[in-house]
Image 1 (cartoon, rainbow, N blue to C red):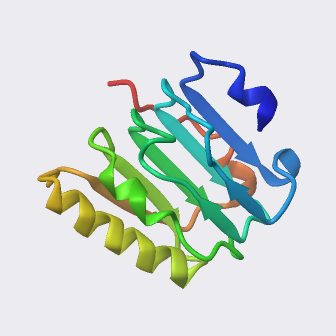
Image 2 (image 1 turned 135 degrees about the horizontal axis):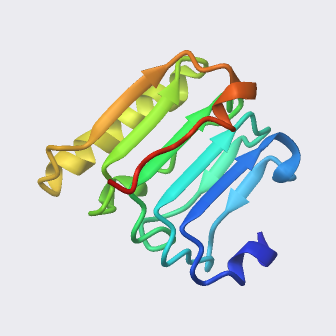
Length: 134
């Protein structure tokens, strides 16, 4: 991630399979100020620690086939720009954390957040078009 951190204008980040090494992603001081779209597909990730400060302009989050992931960081529910979350049904813990993120979004009066549940094939999910700049 240290290389990606050096791209201050990065707006789209897609991580697939072996593009991320390790079972833990601690965002810590990493700030993706311009990131609007984050897609995680088929990662071995178990623990993801992040806050709204790490992704202040995130609009769309996609998590597909991350079967070991314990949860999506709940503090992402405090991102005011978050519009869309897409997840698959492969992980009940992730499903539960998305429900809590939706609740957090309602608390900051974002009633328009869209959550899509998909049965996407991970090999196709990574390469499909992801229109989000409407």
